[in-house]
Length: 425
Image 1 (tube, helix red, strand yellow):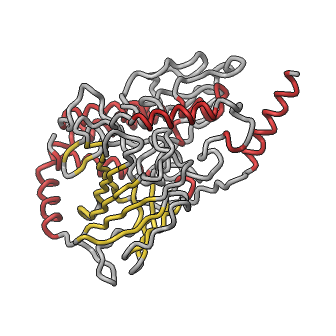
Image 2 (image 1 turned 90 degrees about the vertical axis):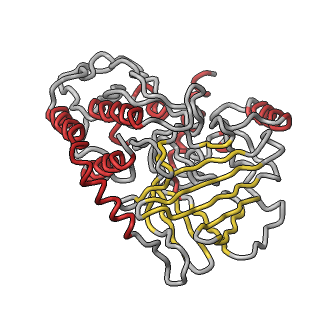
Image 3 (image 1 turned 45 degrees about the vertical axis):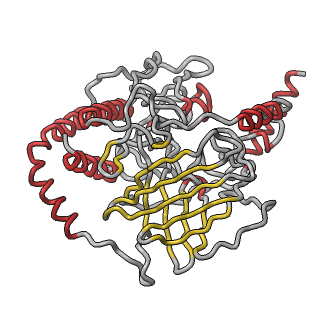
């Protein structure tokens, strides 16, 4: 499979995803609702929610007793089989599609705003199955056969996840069933939280400048975040020692920022802006002559990037997502961010006062923004490190993620912990 054939296949996948519609407040799902017994998660999911670890597509946990058997011939499964057969037959029609794409590429002209800047506006997504760090045994680029195998396994996995649940299945055991996938189990344990309908972790390998990448990190050349410096290791140990003074539910501050609806999951909001391998990896970009606004769907984080000669904040003022200033270098928007909030960690490590991220946004074609970043913090890492992430056009709307600080769910979490403490006395 060559790059043009793969782009056609990606386009077909996006079309299928759009046809399934959008579940309110969550990511896109299937047209057929899936009734899942609490504690009975239907099907397997690729890998676990470990965005900083290399992700592989495995067999996943076994289906618990009482859950629908794998391989049952359901209408959705049969429809998926026909769809997969159609995809398999698609390469025979690729020469015509490739010629059409070449024609479009020749005719495409970089769009510009009314004030002359390259137009980055619209809705975009960076969802992908490509991990942030590269598995040690791999090179920097997949073969197209590997891409087809990875994405084909995901197609099969989703078909099983969306299969009808057996209405006559038995009730799950007391305490529910843990799936082994933190994306499900972390929500509400074995009693069941999100199922596959609400997950939009990414469907495709990241293609950057025509190359199917094995990691988003590209420098160091091994595709892995460099080792921590001595001070970085000490800061990480100090943070863990401080956290051990408290129970997980002692105070609101002991809960994660995402659970408190302060910041997005992982590093979605950035900088750097990275996929969370869960859901809502979507962005809206709006430009004015002197500002660029990037709204992240996850926890509705909003970055306001000022353009022009930087007038930096004082060192002691460190807002969420930092102090970002941008400039145009030719047709590339270059953004430099400092003063990151000390509690906005990257890899679980609080940034030092010397933390800096340089980002580059370049419109590559009608459907793609090439996003590049370099992270520098000599007090934390042994060297700077860089990555490249394709942002692809999102042919859909971005809905409000209605989550706010001090919401009733957080209050109830703390109430439940206090009630448990009273019972244990």
